[in-house]
Image (tube, rainbow, N blue to C red; front, side, top):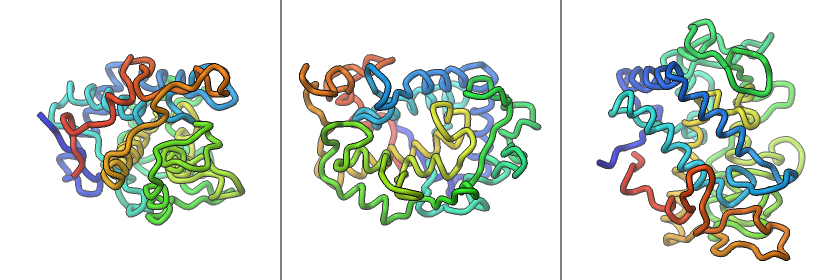
Length: 288
């Protein structure tokens, strides 16, 4: 049965409670930290050798679509009525609105150490201990807007600029690609301040704390953010007549991206599914 992902700002109090309860139970069972480890493992940059599948590559979108589905399936094993809501950061742009309320994700970190002190995922509540990460800290951290080097959330115009690009991705299929919907949405840019990070990337930077880097899954905001990113892929396909994932075929042996990116019909680790198989989600979920 097809289920619905809703805008987080439209959730009822009961829907918020059920989502939070399911997240905490997935964490209690030990499954959540497996998701953190998986994302850290596949967070491979341009400068690293080998295959890039999760970031800085065409498969950024299908990889995270499958990753979201895995988390959603874990949540629905706890409560079959739960799905991952999406956070529209072009509309809900302040720390006082959803998803940053006390009954959802909680708020910003305190100034002294960036520790989140409110909401169900605050360390003081005893249910959300950070076990996998790049530091030894056990508490969830955020730093909205990065006050020392201020950033603003992307605007609707900036997002629409990415959606207008009719080509999915272009060579060299990495963080330096200047054309193509994928990198314009993923957001690797050039220049100082806001220009360095666009759309997806700038949102991670704006939230700050654990949302920076490969261990960003430690913040439940990761999933709401990526559900909105996933929605943009769907909108892009509709806008451009079902335009397809690129590259269609693997780069050749003389190409700098040989064996470094996933072509449309190649399998993505760790699941063995192809980008082509992830292009249509209509038989699984829809967006409200």
